[in-house]
Image (cartoon, rainbow, N blue to C red; front, side, top):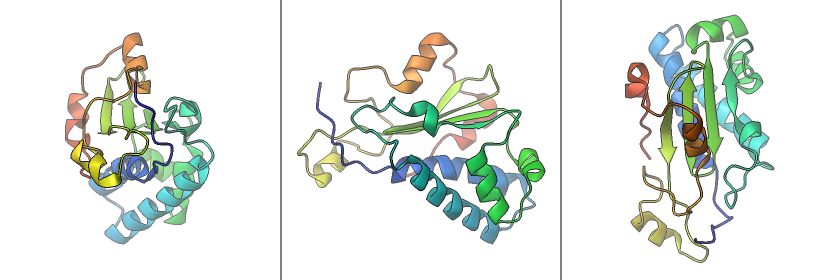
Length: 180
């Protein structure tokens, strides 16, 4: 097992989560491009601030519940904040976003589930870099792309899969991929 670089940023993971949510606003309409950009930037800033003391690249599952974005009977307050910055009410956000959504934003992986019984799908997955590895070598290993974890422990997503379903959601297959 490699020691993980604790200097990793959360930017790619936050970008993946924000891009996923922003696509719902864009696809469902009623929100112009400028509003989507403002929503995206606001949510990126909000999440970065919220997660800055709860981001543990050496223990990716630590703090996972704190970083979970949840929409069910209540709107996630961070998503609600970003929506309000572009003039959307909580009720309007409920119309634009899935009514049941869980989005896990963890170091090296972003996954989501739509519906309580939905499948867990991966939006972003990368490999942690061993300590002391230069950044250019990390990109040669596929850092930032879909690939297996270097660490031999189960990822947060895989722990959930042990408990339930693991096939991708067909209805949201086209929204799964994030380019880096």
